[in-house]
Length: 414
Image (cartoon, rainbow, N blue to C red; front, top):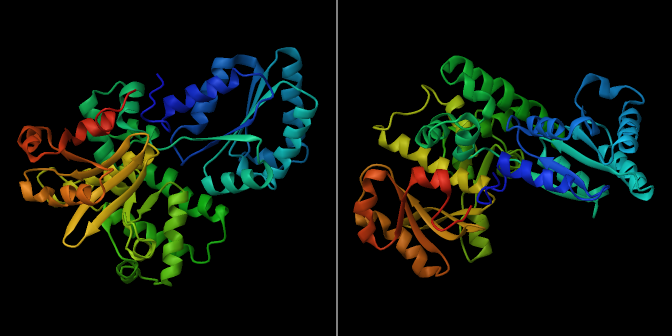
């Protein structure tokens, strides 16, 4: 399966890396970045299983990686494998844990390139910022980057054999971390896994390794507030008032950017033709996996008859879905009108309103007004399946939010 609708999904990235490894070696270094617990290590090990003895996997966050000679020994093993059964493949997982990793990688790669040693190299890490900055500084022109992001429901169908509607329900209520699927029947263990294996290491280790965080407690509070306000437009001033340890507005804005680099929360900007207005507008907070919302929520996921809260969860899931598919996502507001999101990219240009439960025609006024002012956007309404027929006379394209989470917007080919 190589579904081009979701270029950052597990199956697509696996197929892309497989194709790169089929090219003459040494090729460019393949950099695999993504959040914790989305399957980066499992993907590398799956490649090892496919390739056999000529593939070498090593974890740079293992204790022995600090020993003298560790780096040279593994490169030596890769070169020996290349002599016996070319081309060899060296996979270094979590490489940002090594000191001066980018300079060391550049030196090793330049040597095998100069000596024409047939070795492919793949490196991975959970820190997009560290991988990106390190590669740009030392590896310019020598690498290709792949992002493995949060799984769409279609991957839950493919990997775990879920029925499509079940996969959508799981994705909205509990998120899509593959390692958490087996724990869904035990809410306490599920919550502990998300907190201890995903949230805590990301906030307590990955982000602190990305750059200097002067107020780690404030960073945690900003994350907690964002997770508690999914798909809500929250001004920095209001966010600051919700914190027990208020910081400067510039610091809060910076921490929101850091949380996005760590694939935890996106702070969506407002769609505006005026740069000053866009920069001054409050962000829309979107946790990028519903598990982050559910694990932080008191009482767990809301029932569907709790319309306001359930609607926010569905809206957040749809927005995060577009973000994780690599679209450029914003929101639009021109008081008193508002549109949940716009996105541009491989899916086209769409203005999207998400509605759960019953709604009236005037609830689409913002969607129609946005498309009148910005004629490049197509209006799309995402609603409950029971409401699709009632919504079609409104003059906008309609699909269920369930189908959107499974397939993307209308007309996008696999």
